[in-house]
Each structure stands twice: as structure tokens, then as C-alpha cells.
Image (cartoon, rainbow, N blue to C red; front, side, top):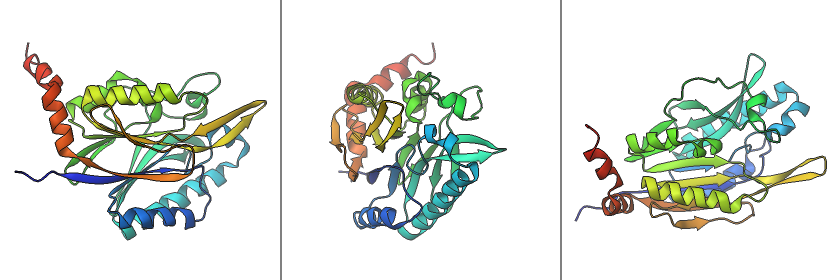
Length: 271
């Protein structure tokens, strides 16, 4: 019998980090001791929440981003891990919302393609991300597992899930900053997407609070790993913590073979 291929992954559930490396190193030492190869951080963990940015000097935001990128580069080398984290870059005096992938050998940026455009949450207005034809999200391999990264809002658009099918993605990494009473909606969407596309989904949601006038934005955690079966394999609650689990190629293959969604599509591809 062929040996099952596995990969140990982690989601860090944190509020915005300070400039010191102490807290991050504490979690990463633990993750390294348990064989973690991929670590995901939530949105607005390496930077302040976007509604705080107008009150901060742009050079301070840039310094914050540069410092955290350098820290993650050092940790990637020290612990032989891959880090994926949303990061705000400054280009031509404008903010660009990105997701960075850092390994011991390289640093790759993915500019989020669709940002929230709503009156109460208008990232589209805050950031200078280009509006253009949609492209394949950041995709890479770690120990034989095909991994794709989506911005939290991008989860809602079928274009990105079509890419999951075409690229035969095993694991989707989903950094978020979800708040208000959206727990159940996010859980159900993530579970459904995992089931329909036969992949694992690892979500890292931030913690913390932001007060705007009389409204308190509470970021509630709920970081989770969802299996291809659509079941929540592990979920954190609303406290600072780290999720570590091992995913399996066998589970992915068995689900895809059992439900045969890809096979049925493939039979009709040339008509």
C-alpha cells in the first residue's frame, strides 16, 4: 500500500502585532517542534486595521511592514517554514493591499484583486490596487501539496474557485478580518466550498477591536481547518492561539473519487 502523503500546517490567531519578535517567536518555536511547514496569519495582523491608517503617518506604516517582512524572512530561514500573511505596501505614496509568501529562499507578493467596496467597509477606496482582468491567485507547492492563496473577500467569487479546479489545488489559504455577527455565514460558505472543490481550507481570522463612533468592531477569531468532506476538522474560539493540524492526500483523493465532480466535468470538456 502506498504511503499517505501529509503536510502539517498552522494558523496563527492574533490581533495586530507590535514591532517586537518575542510573541511571534514563542508560537513559531512551538510550531517548529511539531513539524509545521506552512504558517498562515490573518488580515491586519502585520499592520493596523485599514480604518486606522488615515490617522497614522505613512512612513510608520511602511516601517511596520518592512520590519515584519524582515522578521518573517529570518524565521523562515531559522525554522524552515513557509509564511503567508497579508501585508500593506507603500508605492508612490499610496497603500497597496498584498499577501506575501516568504520562504527561506524567496519572497513573493500577491496583490489582492478584489477589495470590499461597501460604504461601511471600503477597502477599494482606501487602497490603490489595480482594477484589471482577473488572474490566477498566488499558487505554489509544498512537499507535493498544491496550495492557493485567496484574499478573504475573494472567497465570494467563482473565478477563483474555477482556478482551484483547473489547478487541482489541495489546500486553500484564507486570511480574513471578519467581524460583527458573520460567524455562521463564513462557516457555511467555507464548508460548502471545501466540499464542492474537494480541498482543505485553512482560515486565519484576526482578533482585536476597533471603535468607530458608537459602533464596536469585534474581530472574533473562528480560525479553522475544514476538510474536503465539508466538515470542520478543528476550530479556534475567540482567544489568541494557534491551530496546528496535519492534512492528508489520501483524504483529498478519496473525496474526489467518491463524489466524481471533476470526472463528470472532464467527460464533457471537449464538447
